[in-house]
Image (cartoon, rainbow, N blue to C red):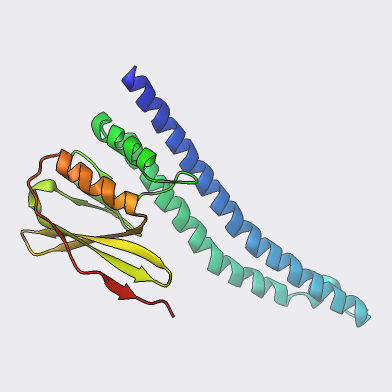
Length: 209
C-alpha cells in the first residue's frame, strides 16, 4: 500500500514538473513570437502608409529577419536551460530510493507550494543533494563537519542560507525563502541522528537596489 502511494506521489510530482516546464517554455516561446508579430505589424503599417510600390513587403521588411535571429539567440538558450534543469530533476526523482522519496513527499507536505517545483535541497542515500544551475551537487553526510544557518533580508523579504562545511574546508550553500524549508531541513538532520553540530549565526542584511 505504501509503495503504491509513493508511486502515485512520484508520478504526480513528475507530471507537475512537466506541466511547469511546458508552461514556462510556452511563455518564453509566446513572448518572442508576440514581439515579432508586433514588429511585423508596425513594419507593415509603415509599408502601407508610405505607399511603396517598387518593393514587395517581404523585401521592405527584410530587417525583420535580423530581429528574428536576435530573439532566437536571446530566448532559445533560456528555453533549453529550463528544459535541461527540469528534466535533470525528473531523472533524479526516477532514481531516488523509496525511503528518501518518502522524505521528499513529507517535504512537499510541510512546505507551502502553489505548484510542483525544484527544491533547494533533497535528501538522498548518498548525501544532501543541492540543485545548482548546471549540475546537482552531492555532499555526503560523512564529510559534513558542521551545519550553520543564518537569516538574511532582501528588500522586504527574509530568507535563510544554510552552509554545509566539510572536513576538507569546503563550504556548500543552500539559500531559500520560507521558514518551513529550514525547519524541515533541521528536523530531518536531527531525525537521521548524524551527530553533526548545527549552529545558528547572526542575521545579515542584504538590501536590493
